[in-house]
Image (cartoon, rainbow, N blue to C red; front, top):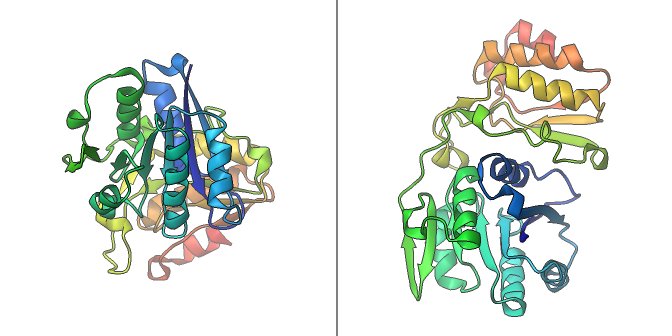
Amino acid sequence: MKKVILSTICPGTEDIQLALYYLKAYFNKYSTFTDSVEIEVIPFLPRQKPADTAKKLTEKNPDILGFSCYVWNIIDTLKICRYVKKAVPKVRIILGGPEVSPRATEILSNNRSVDVVVIGEGEETFKEVSEYFLFGRKSLETIDGIVYRVAKKVIPNKKRAVIEDLDTIPSPYLQGLIDMNKYQSISTETHRGCLFRCHYCYYHKEFNQIRYFSLPRVERELAFILKKNPIGVYFMDPTFNADKERAKEVLRTFIKYNKTTRLHLELRAEFLDEETVELLH
C-alpha cells in the first residue's frame, strides 16, 4: 500500500482543510489505483516547531507529501520540506496553493527539497502527478499545470484548463471523508471564480471566470452538513451574491434545512436587495 500525506499549517486553530479533502475525494473517485493508495490529511498548528512537525511526518514514512501553501505558512512549510527530505530522501514533495502558484519557478530554484509545484486548481493535476510518482503512469512533461525540476533545470509545463463542471469534483462530506464532529465550523463552497479584478488579490488571476456547483449538488451537501447541526457554516465563495438570484436560492436551501447553525459568508453590499436582506435575516 502506497502512503500519501496531505498537510498544511493552519492560520490559527485547526479547521477543515477543504482543499486537501477535495484532492483526496477526487483521487478516490477517478484514480484506477485507489485501492493501492492510502491518503491521509494531517493539518498542523502554527505553534508547533517545523522540526517537530517534520519528525511526525517522517515517522509515517510517506511516499508522497503534499502541502497546501499560503502566505502565513510558506516559510515554515519550506523548512519542514528540508527536514523531511533529509530524513527520507525518497519521499516526493508536492506543493500547491495560492502562495506558490505565482512563484513556482522561484520556489523550485531555491528549494531542492521540493519536487513539483502545482499551479492553480489542483484536483486533476494532483491525481496525475501522484499516479506518476507512485506507479509510473504518464510522465511529468505530459502533465499540465505543474512546474518541476530535471537535474538543475526548472521546467514549467503549460497551464491546465479549469474544471468547467464543478459537480465532477466529489464532495468530501458526501463521501464521508471528514469527521465533522471534530469541528465547530464547517467550510464549503457553492462556486469558484470572481467577477472583480482587485489589484491586491491573487484569487482572480487563477480563476477569472465564475463556475458554479449545481443547485442540486449544493442542496445535497447542505442537507447533509446541517443535519449534523454544526455551530457554524462558512461559504468560501469570494462573492456569494455575484449572481443575486442564485444566491437567494442557496439561502432558501440553507433555511430549509437549518436549525440553529450560524452562516458566515462574504458578499458585496451594493448587490443587496430587500429580498436578500430578508433571507439573510
